[in-house]
Image (cartoon, rainbow, N blue to C red):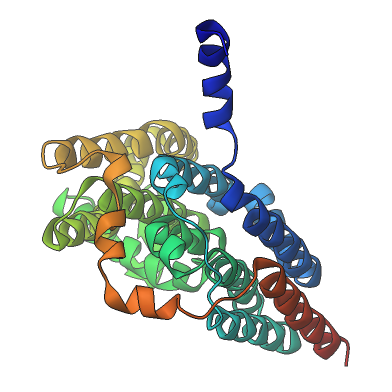
Length: 334
């Protein structure tokens, strides 16, 4: 072949999907479609929450973050041959059982955890243990697809109210508190659900997990950064509530509340996020593509090699998952 033709052909060949991956990926796609079809009600509920509830709007970015994390491991993945992992079927069955229990008892959160868990287990089953260990972060990050946080709104309301009343007294404004109600000379303020700070907190925890496990290697630094992503938003939300009450003493409650929504929605969140990331930036220890366990380290773990000794065809793994999905669908109808 002439050199110029070879040069043009080489990038196309390298850009394609390795032949060893084509069968497993096709099998995974079929299994995923079957699982989503069975758990469609839970996925529909999640999509509704992502799109229509502003607390969870940021979750629409999670699939793209997962895809980015997988793409960072493209070179390592090309060096691995997927080997289906038979015990993964137990995880698929457990996830589908959890989904079924949530559906039967009307607990959406449980059903949604089961629906997402079934897809995570399908990856483990069809692509294998070695691939799943290499992609442990994006697989774990998929947990953020499940909308959660409503359960912590009441305690966040009380914490915000406590911080706000303490700062209000410290700033010299007379006020009385009764639960989430704060009575001041400018009027009565209520720390409503929308003012609990849950949206800010959930978004910061999601971002915190991504940064902690892509940029830090030491668990101590991960723990400190994640703690900051929890504590700082809670304290900041209390300060925001106090600032609204304090400003209201001069410009009126109605104008202060409108100002609060604009500042908190666009400026305050951005400032706190920038401060957290800026503070952490000087302590980063690695580039994002170096996240997770190195492929060579995984290859040196004897238990991984022993777990891969039992051959299992990707097509057979997909059929087994489809059968489990069918059983789950039948159980839900009975």
